[in-house]
Image 1 (cartoon, rainbow, N blue to C red):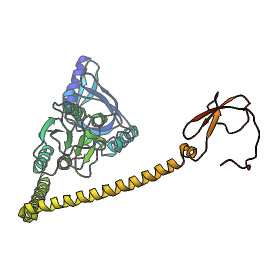
Image 2: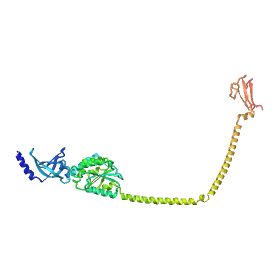
Image 3: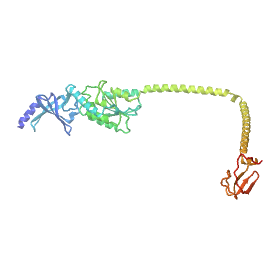
Image 4: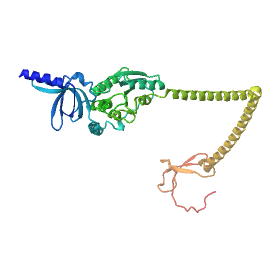
Length: 402
């Protein structure tokens, strides 16, 4: 049996050392060793296949269940099981239909989670001091980015975090590079995730879920510039700002240095002109002051001020005298009114006040007064004490003694 298997192996492997196979991927398993095991199927047959760990990074896209692909490789026989499999060294998607279907499905799922929501976008610093660039260090994208950046702004420090930007495993590598960029000390102000143009298959790493989530979770604002203007990846949608190209990413990140310099120059010109106008105005005012009377005849100004003060003092004295005279007149009139209403004035005219010796309340009626009580009478010049002998009522109209 081993001899038969050996001959089959020699015959099969020699005749099928260069094979192209198309089919749908199923039963895909990623082993902890890094190898990928899968099956390729069509309507009539199933072919087992393997992608060795060292080959995986060279693939155009990451294999996935349900993906229609065309693969290149060779058939190999595994004697212990008497089975054969296709060892894949190249793998491409068949057309773009399957990739676009996967793209639409993942887009809907991540959009439902809110990863593309405008509300979560963060502003990009106007004058970034440190910029991290995640890309391939040998590609055209980094050259275009740096050329555009240096033409606009030379004050930023640029740190390139290298990563593959295409092929199987590139998405995981890019996600890891983003994490490294976010941990750089001192902290960078913005991260540029860039790649040049290519087909949907070439740009597929930027549509992988692992990279899209890494962009959305980055603690540092991310500007994503992938492909050409018409290319839109899920990483673009998750980034804080989408750039049309790597060159546009540099424009989005950096201020326009030459334009800023022109603005500063114009501002400096306006500032100098304004200062000259203020100096001229101050000089004119100083000349006018120098020609004024205070400098021409300072003693005359003092005499005028002294004369003014004398006039003011005389006016104040006149006002004070008039005020005092009016106050005295008002005080005399008030004293006269008080004197006219004084009880002493009434007593001087013949009136008197009488009260019981036992009570200081003035009597206004005979009620309560009995014969034999002592009365006190206040006259203008003294008091009289008397005893009541008799009490009679009288008419107020009776004639009073004069």
